[in-house]
Amino acid sequence: MRRDSEILQDLLIFRVTREGFDLHVDLYGGPENVCAAVPFTFETSEACDEHLATLLEWEERQTPVTFVRHGSQITLVNDQVVLDQLAADAG
Image (cartoon, rainbow, N blue to C red):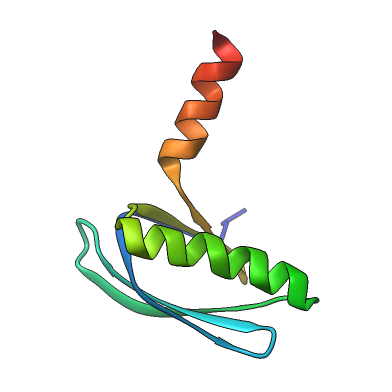
């Protein structure tokens, strides 16, 4: 069985914009020289606000993110936070 997945690492956020419950994230960089716009839609204003705050912080700090797509589901991940949590759980 073939999985429809894609992983792109070391991307930076160029810009994040909001329209209603939708966020549009412009990404660039990485070994593949990515330049892409990724849309996200949230069910509530609160969820949208929370994700917007995180993305704006990553944009401001120029935090590298990993783009993960599995089928039609897309996730942006701050790998450093994941690694820090794993280290904390192991220690």
